[in-house]
Image (cartoon, rainbow, N blue to C red; front, side, top):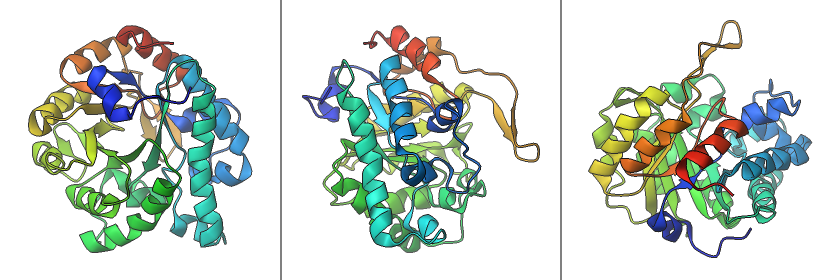
Length: 302
């Protein structure tokens, strides 16, 4: 269903449920994501699979769908011989596919255009380290064309997500300035620090007085770290908080397999919303079943 309100207006009225991990849902649909472009490859080779994944989350009760553009960049597609014009069209398609699924839902569903970190384009795990050796200006120049292209496709919000350090946060905020679309900023963290080891309170404070930022928080982190981060983000910024941690399993790069137990507990959502979270969902390995349970726990299900 097409939203009748802006996302910011909806957040003022109560919490909303985000979707879960796109890649795990695509894999459950039988998609091969071994390519360096990850799920972004399917924008060209299997857009119907992306739309089906969005639809699965909307049916589970997700009220915000995050596009498949996390790892879609002009540079990444260029390495595969895809020109800038075609890449721009694929980025716009990521918004269109999420919008199509949203408009078929039985409740209001908003679309968040994902702009992942520079490290996602490298496909070497460096988004969990940050500190790429680039200046803020160089990072801004990398992010600006993609953000402008996504903004032109008219999503409801930009998701500047999985940000590992404050330099990249500054660059992303500069790149998004003046694009005409509100945004959220979410860091990937370890404990109470960014993945690059910076103080998380100071990282959140970067967005405190930026009126374009409608929510700030964390994603792609351990569920155990989420609650403290929510309280910290609310205290430092006074803004609605966004939180969508991983399942708790960990990726074993050598074995190319997930290890450990699932620790994502939908029951914790009430604690998160009580601490200031207004956008609550899941990231890697959190599927539609847990998003449905999350929607039930927060009372926002269809």
